[in-house]
Length: 209
Image (cartoon, rainbow, N blue to C red; front, side):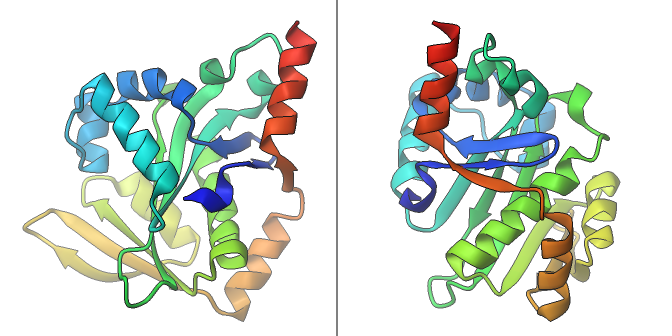
């Protein structure tokens, strides 16, 4: 999606940046993992196919994605950006007749960063972005029935179970964007700052040089 091609979002623990071509090799290595393929219901791609996917995600109007960077390492200007990658977060506009409905997907690819509250912060940041920039009024997630940790996290974020599909072994949860949700997002995200991505990247590169 073009709207976030120069957007950087900085939180307490993470920095969200657009998915660029330099991120593709690391992402491709992640997706060789059978575990991540199962968690994201994805098929393995060749590196060339992964580059094609990155380009389509940048251009398509029904997908919005950010790469998740670990903030402390990113602040160390000696580390290349791809070395700071720990996952990604996506919004899919799944219904062309209702662009206010979004399916949310988050992946913490690096196991050592799971269970540290990163998923919760990233989810809230992406929901706030979806509400304020994309006009989303309802969020939906589809999670494998075995992924009890993710289900519990979304339930703590006030998502409600809507249906269970035994065929695909997944549960669907939803959260309408009401005044209560808006207040919660504002309460928890007062620390988040939006910056010019290219300017921030150039500043890091100049510091290294």
